[in-house]
Length: 119
Image (cartoon, rainbow, N blue to C red):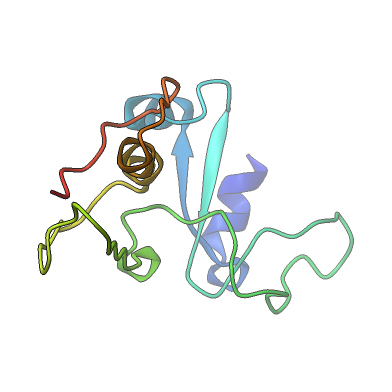
């Protein structure tokens, strides 16, 4: 398999290849055959021309597993009815939209996660 061959060479920046079964267990990409997770500092290219590996072209990109600590970010929320100094701990980014929707008093029925308790 080409992906395994690419992953075997550290110069290609492949961190891990997830199988369809691993993806489905993690709740993502049910139609995908596999998923390539990159090491920090590498990103997916946009073409099939050489070189296959080159310097990243931007500072933000998909292709990293959320288990990589470098992919964590901060979330701050300030406003009326928001508790001052409350730590939410580590959150799922899919909780942000339903949390903001609840604060704004609007419905978001297609949300994949429950809103955070921020009061």
